[in-house]
Length: 242
Image (tube, rainbow, N blue to C red; front, side, top):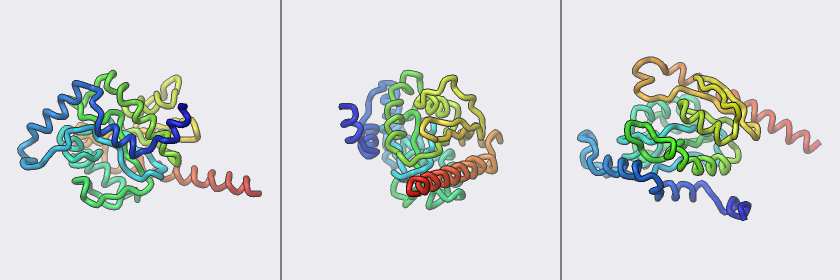
């Protein structure tokens, strides 16, 4: 039965379930309150105010895992990292690395296309003070597990921040947990590699803890790891044919 359920699952189904989820009362109350009150600079805009699903290329080789939607970013626009300063950093870096069709992400209708990349998060609702509680992270964990299993071509997972790093490590069942750090690497089951990065939050970018060159180095490294994985896959295919 479990196998049959897995065969019927899809990224589209996960995305629909995330959007409809009301599993965490504190997060539901907060995301909807923010959507009702909004912010003066976004006057007249209708906020999304629901769970924010992951998005991107279903054949992605690179998976990017963030923390949670921003109250006036993805909780407003309905797309991960869209409409806030963190997203400005992320999509500019993805564009420079060849994963995004444009360097900005302002709305779900802005024409942005990700190629070879998929973006998700450990928690899919905006949390107060950007701090989801352990129980809320646990409630969202099955969504991340399903996304990682459905993204069958994934070879590199970039974890933006320590919470995302720990969430991916937990999904992989790693014991002991690998130590997080910027550009830290850890192997995952199935030949995947987890790559750590400081989160492009304003707290990190305004203070210089994360610079443009440091962030670019993450996706340069991801490209190299993907190239190595692709070469290994081609070699394995040739061995099978011969």
